[in-house]
Length: 475
Image 1 (cartoon, rainbow, N blue to C red):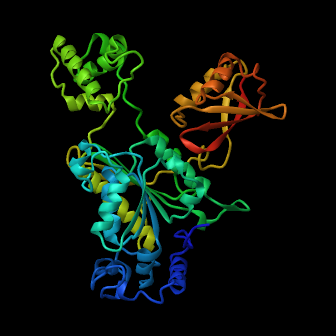
Image 2 (tube, helix red, strand yellow):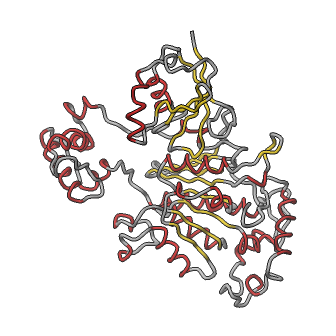
Image 3 (cartoon, rainbow, N blue to C red):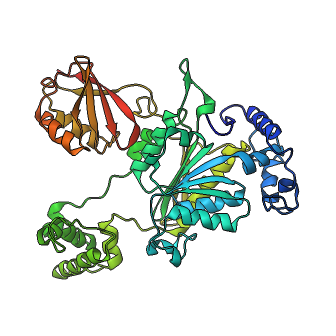
């Protein structure tokens, strides 16, 4: 159960307004009082503080939802009850926290597992030089709470995987400003796992909307995901570009770009020269490591008359960093925060459902409706089909799970029920089990005892749920 009754935005707008009116009547406070009507209540509000929000909630307009009914209860719900979760306190996260707090959202939680680096200070404006080394979530929460009266941002210096279902179930809306596709897929799977079905029918009150934003240089996107109703992250996994890898023949013999020289040092020279001792891996956050790669890259570039090697570029290539642009973060965060406001107030029709932003050459935006996949491994509720020959080896099946554009698993663990018992066919993440199950990779599916129509359960770090596959033998 949620900590607060969740009025379903999926019900007719008038029903949600009724639900929110009911929340207002059952509130521990007898009325909005000083906090909304003006004056100086216990929240530190002042006269006219929320006039800019009232203009959207207490009057109709040409862009409001056709069924929207202006009321004063909407503002109370937003100020006192609506609970939102922001995942990520970096470039997008700082903008999101600022926007949401200034819009009147007071019950905010933020999760980030990262600490502040000096390179963050040029765009992540909630941080100062004295904060370097501290957790992003904690510093961001302190800044917003001190700057905006009445706002209560609760920080969590953890991974999203460290929290249980009950934690996520308490929120009305989740907003992600992540730089990891794996993390996006995981939170997508978690919100889908919270859905309730009654006789095969989705319970709208169990839906927690996910607003997802992402930026890449001068490009960005924002999307609204209603788990179980609209396209989820997995439905559109093919939209995420694969990580750029340079051909080995190019970086070894015919480098043309400064990146080729850096990759040569990273991939070939580092393991050959082991500059910091046996078994020491290249650490993109260690200045001494980056400096060594930088100097060796300059030497390599000089041999081929290539210019453009810089320390910052070296670090970016080693850490696979795409340069962040503050203005892109601001635009995408503004779009995401606006969608949160639309859903929380039910005053406007939400984005349907994917927006693309590009200001590389001029300014371009485009909105389209991403469609659900009928056989989506996350939200379709149906087993996925796998078609292989009985003579195919388990290694081939594993390769398919990791290389398929629609699956893109990272370290799948495969189990099956054989002779009434669960048997682990392969598990990579635990060394002792990996060693014991490794011989299975060279065995055929038939030799492993798998049959036509066999169900395989696959677990992976990209999802909190186990994905069920149905094996179909081809002739």
